[in-house]
Length: 473
Image (cartoon, rainbow, N blue to C red; front, side, top):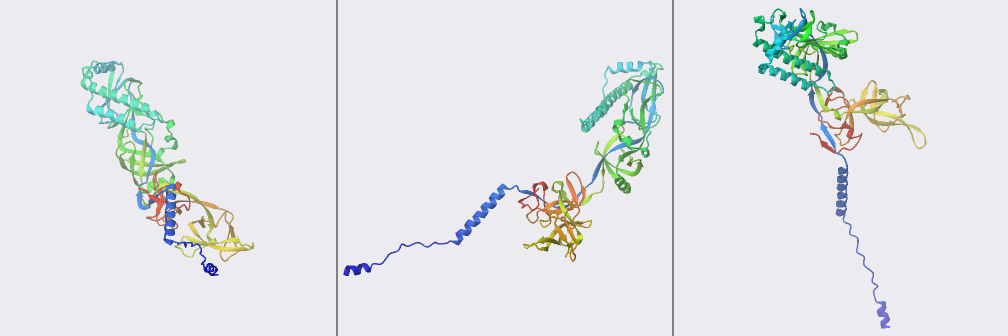
């Protein structure tokens, strides 16, 4: 009995389970670590977008033209037949009565010059400098797509060396004074002061006011180069003389540009051949379908004495505004919504309220109102790009039953603003543009402002892309 009581008094034992210890701090640490890891992986897999800070800047606005040179030129003809020998340097200014060339009817002078030239015939430093400058200028302007200037260079160089040689030989012999060549050689002097040029091209008697479009067609241009020992007939042209420091460059432009240049009166011109600049007065003439601007100069006529066509830059006034790189500019399409279908509560805001027709779950027609971003207001339309408006979306005019179905689209030029960390299109108005940068009108409605951050390369993002920004230097 005692044993039974002892068994009944035994206590039933249960297995003890350790309670779960929930550490909130550890959970937060794991969550933060996972988020940091996700951001790191996302950043490494992303392509960081280069940003650009918009600042006030300026650009000059040069315009490049090919001009036609018109000068006071007089062609000099040979009084008799024979072989021509020149003793003046091309482009050199001669006084009235200076020796320019001779005409040898018998050929004796050519032989005497050749015989004298077989001896010591050295050129001065000035002579070598002239030849070197011609070679350097040709090499600088040479274009392998335009081969015809090579022939001009060849004739110019041959003519220059022969004339320099003839001049030096003539200065060292006295055949003319001793009469050893008789009366077969006629020495000819400059009839007036001016710069001598040993070529003609048919433009010598052309006036600036008479220029036509055909005068600019180079396929019709032909230049006759005069060289030493060439046989000429009596009355043939042998050289021309530029008798005035005044000269004109004629350029072709549209009427608007021509009028603007005329109103300026004086413009600064850069000659691309020499990089020199010079001021010119302006005038405008029209012939047929052509509009021409006459740029008149009073210096540098000798520098371009052998040229008929010349490349120039006209430096117009400086443009100031927001300076942005052209790579940041993008063109985007928008729906055009009539202004009367939008309500603007604040004129300084870039949003407007639009009523859009929609259907509820029961199929009932309703009008919902949305505040949508306006990118531009122009010609009676709002430029809208929002998911609420698609092709065929029906909009309702406020306080009216009149409707409008979205279908017409237009484009705007702009940049992607990234002030808020995502690519947000902003419309711009370009005041001036060159090959690298544009000047944009500042503080325009719905537009760009100074110190905004934009995407440097607009092709690297799309609308509303999140931007991992790195600043461009």
